[in-house]
Length: 131
Image (cartoon, rainbow, N blue to C red):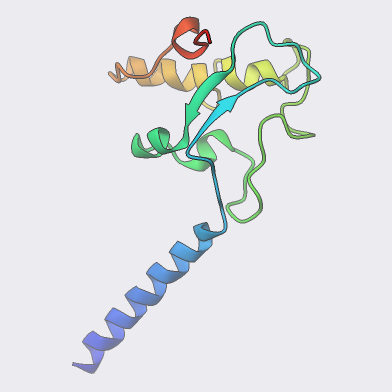
C-alpha cells in the first residue's frame, strides 16, 4: 500500500514538474507572421496558429530550433536569428519560411504533403491571403 502511494506521489510530482517547465512559455494562439519593419515584404502577412500546429503534433523546437526549452522563445526576426534582409543569405528571414529544409514552413509543409497530409498548404496564395 505504501509503495503504491509512493508511486502515485512520484508520478504526480513528475507531471507537475513537466507542466511547470512549460508554464512560463506563453505563445499567442493565433498571430500574423510579418517581415520585420526594416524589410519590404512583397506578399501579404501570413495568418499562423500555434494551436493548430500543436494539434498536428509539431513541437516548438521544430521551428524554434535553437530554443533550449527554458529561455524565452524568440521570433525568427529576432536579432541574430533570421534577421538578414538578403534572400540569398543562409540566415535570411525569407529562407526561415521558404527554405527547403525541415525547419522552414514551406519545407515542412512539402514534407507533410509528401507523407499524405493534404491540409498542409504549399501554394503561395494558400498562406499569403489577400486582405
